[in-house]
Image (cartoon, rainbow, N blue to C red; front, side):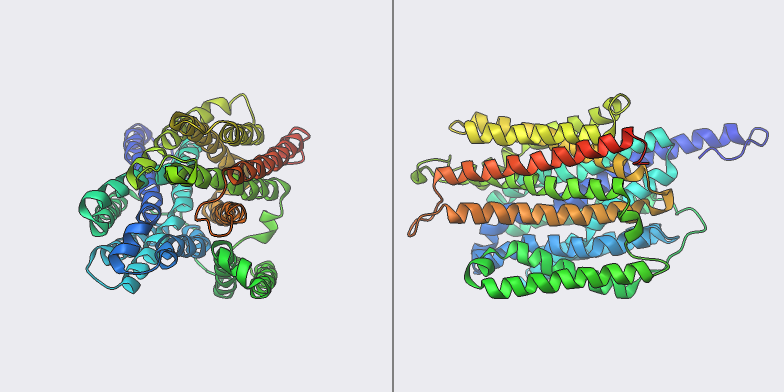
Amino acid sequence: MTGQPVGGATVKAFPAARSEARLLVPALMFIALVVAAVASLGAPLITSVATSFHVSLGSAQWTLTVALLSGAVATPVLGRLGAGPHRRATILATLAVVVAGSALTVLPLPFAWLLAGRAAQGVGLGLTALMMGVARDHLPEERSAAVIALISVVSIIGAGVGYPLAALLAEFGGVRAAYGLGLVVTAAALLTAWRSMPEAPEGRSAHVDVAGAVVLAAALLLVLFLAGERNLWSRHLAVAAGLAVVAVVLLCVCAVIELRSTTPLVDVRAVRHPAVAGANLAMFVGGIGMYLLLTLITRYAQTPHGAGYGFGLTTFVAGLVLIPFSVLGFIAGKLTPRVRTRITDPLLLAGSAVVVGGGFALFAAARSDLAELFVAMGVLGFGVGGFSAAMPGVILAVTPKSETSSAMSFNYVVRSVGYSLGSAIGGLILAAGTDPGHLFPDDNAYTTAALVGIGAMAITTLTSLALARRRRSGRGV
């Protein structure tokens, strides 16, 4: 950042570098927050979309699902492009696609165009890993670690920011007004990137493994589709099982292609490193548990009193329940870089998993009062914030700088699949607990789902502790 010390050149260069860093850090945070918040806009608007476009709730659900799908598919490709010399152009082009998609969601066009716009918005989710790559390349090492941790946290809590705002706008101005928020903030993100994103360091390859990208995209589409289509498993089990087998075969084919490639989309050899593999396993299982609790609390809050439980909250008020999640998640993200000077990242992962497990225990034992849901959501946010902030440190400790975007992109894909499965598992448990002829599940079904979540977080804790033991023995580095 400061250049070579030649006469007074260093003195002149250093203030400029610090000035750029001051502008760069807020820009990275803002872009990561925007793409996460915009992708989550579909969640509070599903009912409004169904009403406005005269489609079923299942069809309206795709306004959220398609964004997650396109994000998961685009992430590894963007991660590889971000590792090359054209990272700035990749960031700007991706944000331009997101802005164009945002415009499609606002214009008075048929439902199919709304889905196309949401898919384009979802592509922006792949930028999170690129923001981490920029931070690691252009900030001092100690500063970059803290910024990367916060970027990881912001990419999670963005949903808690976008949800209540979108619900409020939809309540007073309709669906188009809510999606208009996405257009405004994505245009601002594009302008911010144009002014602040530096060029990537020289000497990096820009080659993308097209064959691997196509096969991986097909596999991820199948995996996430199967995770989201709960009715397929209950009504057409043979078809669902067959598609699952196809997805596994495609993933195996992708692994073979990547192992043979000189410039793989996903470095399978690096992924097999014990520290990276363990971190991704913890992210996968932990993601299932984290999103499961988020789903349970928001659904419970909106269940009408007639079901014998729940609070019958409107979409906007239910969105406010996410505020403790976002606030405490951000606080945990700010505290983690300070704590990690005394506690290793794997132990932080384990501790955060225990906190999330505590959130499940609170929800299972006490949910008769709305304040208890706020407390459980706050505990979840603190645990998720700490977990998200510690995760990059585990992976990047054994990852070259040039592969930062690619390595974190793979971790994001693992996280997306875990979140999707968490949502699907929650839906399946609640569906199994719904008596014939009833619209809402029995209250005990929520307790059962919470116990499953505690099990998931116990596995996550044990995996993280195994990583910590390996690092202490010197084998994990």
